[in-house]
Image 1: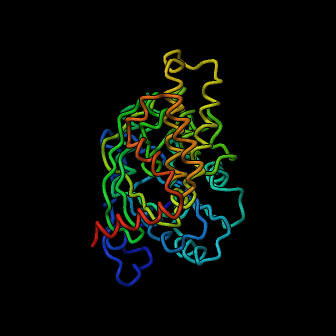
Image 2: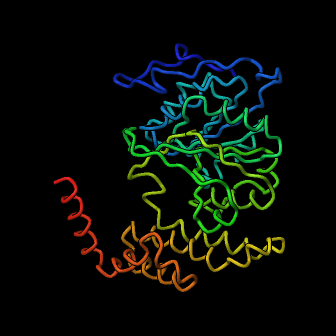
Image 3: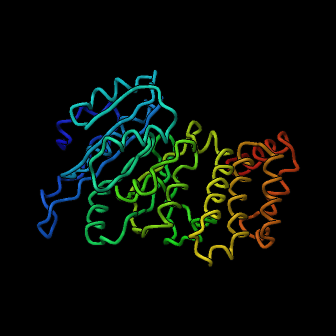
Length: 345
C-alpha cells in the first residue's frame, strides 16, 4: 500500500487542526535500524454509522508514515455519509466494503481474512492511533520475537477530542486479566497473525467482550507484554457501544470464564483463585448494569460477587455501589443530578 504524506490527503475540514488533521508522523526509513525490512502490519477498522469520527480515525492510520502497511475499512452498510468519507481515501486503502454484516466481530474477521501482514490490530471508527504508534510496536515485535501480543496505554477523550485523562494499564498477568483487575485497552493492542489464527480469530457470537475473549485465548498459549507508552486515543461518547450497551459486557465475560475453567490445560494456580476471578467479572457486570440504571440486575451481580469472594465488598467502593442500587431509578437519577450541581455549581 502506498503511504501518503499529509499534503497528498484530502484537505482538513475547516477548523480542524493538529493530529491527524494538519500534523503527520514523519515517514520512517525504508528499512529498520538494523537493515532488515519492516514487518507488514495489517489494520482493520470496523465501522457503522460513525461518520462524525471516521475520517479522523482513517487519517490517524494513514499518517503513521509506516513503510509496509495494509489498511482495510469494513463498513456495515452505513447510511450517514460514512461511505462518502471512505471513498475520499480509497486511493490509500488496501481494501474496503460497505455491506451488511453480522456484527463487529464478523466485520473484523472478514478484514483479517484478506490481510497478509505479520502483525494485526483493529481500530474502531471512533478511536485514533497516536503518532509513531505503529512504528514503535513493529520495532518492539522485531526485537522480541518470543512475544505475540503487545498492548500500550491510552488517552481518553470526549466526543470532541478533548483530553479527559490518561489510562495507564498494569503489566501483564494472566490471573489479573481473568479477574478484570487488568484491563487491556483494545485500541492500543497489537498481536501476531499466527496467534490470531491459532485461537480461531474473534468469536462472532460475542458483540461486546470479544476483545477480552481474544486476549484470554491468546494468553493461554502465547506471550503477552505491556509496552509502557501511549499508543492510542479512546473516545468516550454517549453513542459508543461500551457506554450505550455497557450492561451487556458482564454476561459475555462470564461466558469466557466458563470456557476457561472448562479447559483441561488451565494452570492449577488459576483454579485456586477461581472464586476471586468470577467475583471480579461479576463486579464488572454489576457496574455495567448500574451505569445503565438496570438497578435490580446490578444489585444481583454485586451480591453474587460478594458471595464468590467476600473481601470484594471492601474493594472499589463495592459496598457504596451495592447500597445505591436500593435508591431506585428515580432516586439514583436525582442523586447524580445533585452531585453534578454540587460539582459545577
